[in-house]
Image (cartoon, rainbow over all chains, first blue to last red; front, side):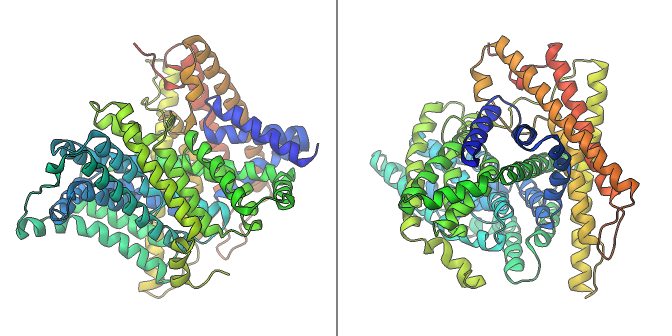
Length: 438
Length: 183
């Protein structure tokens, strides 16, 4: 069978197997084993455990559990509430300050915790009731938190970016930097929409503000600055060339755990175990998919599917932007059903040769891909963030949350378009800090 | 929705086999978490030696890698027990109770089969390394059967937990895919 037809068959089989409800990693192993047995013989199965182990045998992977521990220890504390309060006190003079400070708190907390659902829960628990109390429309209150939560996978340090870096062998340091300005662009668009729709709802009373004294403004800082300091320190150590991402992440994990224990008095063994259990659970889940996706991409390339697809796309006489559009639609659909990490690991080996052949920058593409995944987080049927919001604000109808999130999806699509027109927003910072890549 | 099932830990319903497997998987989870913590500590120690004492490190990087690999493999059964391995449960959610149960039995059986294959060849791979005394080609040069041991151990324990999950669904102790019936 020619590799292209085989590729279509693999894609079809993968969709069937994954939709059966089997776990993603095991599903990838099933598809890989099935095609290897049929087209390469039983003997190729012998290699599967070796490839599985080999995929995990990589120091860069250490950064995944480390950044997850960092995020989990921050998420286990009251840091989210403190951050929210601090921003509210400091941004109170800005018109519509509450929704602005909510989005700002989401962006900062998302960067620190790297987790979308954790951000929605931590900021939303305080922010949504407060915004509604002050008369913001329910849709804006819920939608801004749902959208703000998605920023965690774009703004560094981001586990999703690390996974992309590992899957495509691109520099994690560069990827982190590439996420900074697009992240800020998204925050800006989100804020603009929130203010506009609040103003349009005619409820100008919400623009009124409480006044905080300097004492109130200053007393909150000692509780939020340490975490922000660690994040900046970790990034500085990485870009100062002091240590690798894995090493700095390990120090960051240790420091965040210590701060959680000292400042937030997370002493009880049961509380510490919760942090460790959640981190282990998430890390093992991601690392299992990484290893299984490694076996999957071995199967794809040993049956010459990856090569054939890249070659085929090369011979297609389509405009590269049409191609990029098609890739975006494909990623968007995949993101509707699968978690970001799974989409990246499954598609990267096939997509990377295509996009580099078409002359796109893989670092820039990482940002586009990540924003696509962010859309998936707030769109049905998966839309993890929508359900988290539904859980913390049960009296807001899921439909209202969904409708409130849709404009933010539009903001993300606009951001993708802006990034296509001005790719420098993503690539300038990594080039400026680390030197041009090509 | 996809993502981690909202349902909590797999239920054992007082069945001795299920309880024993659950205990084993939890123990594996503790082991896995400890290995990750040790990896954090070792990495920090390595950085301390290198940047503060200006010394050189020989074995730490490799040891940390093996610890994370082992933490992953040995953590598999525990995460399975917590239903932490993500799946797409959109179709099972749309199914009626009977069909959903049959589907769960089918997917669990397929999972057991593939993990069985990984266990079989993983054991062979480990046994090769043990039999021939393979060593890693680094300065430290540890015996490779030690890190490779995580392969049969992890997949073996995961298979056990999958069998327990299958038994729980067949005996109607646990809901298929951990999805509770509505109403």
